Image (cartoon, rainbow, N blue to C red; front, side, top):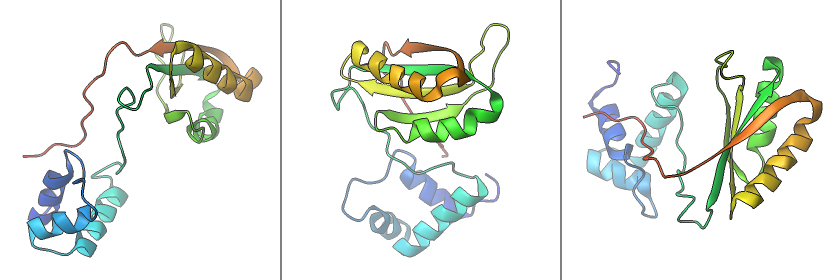
Amino acid sequence: MNNLDDLDRGIVQCTQAGLPLVPRPYQQIADELGTTAENVMARLRRMLKTGVIRRIGAVPNHYALGFRGNGMSVWDVDDGLVAEYGRRIGELAFVSHAYRRPRHLPEWRYNLFAMVHGNDRAEVMDKVNRIAVMLGADSRAHEVLFSTRILKKTGLRIS
């Protein structure tokens, strides 16, 4: 974070709670900071490329969208297959995100996580079964951890 100049810090501060919900959010940020929308976007691309920020994306409230059965499916697959299966599972319309996590043997054997959304738990289980069919014998085990409450999601914060 030490390599950020004042403008980069301003961009992060203007976006850390989310992009402005206006037709031209980058222009609004640029106007606030005294620069151009093109410069804001170029700096965000650079911060993404260098790892200062990891992503720019929507963080929907699935409950507000009507999805009441949200479950994190966890999978035990060969480490060499996680990237490919994570990509394929992440492309499914009912999965918001899929990613690798380290195992913590012997207590926790799972290394592939995928958040599955549905109207209720039964629908989520049907969708998890579709993932199980996709993985076939490459899945040694899986579980579904259902959400019981909404956790506040926040990204990078600087003052």
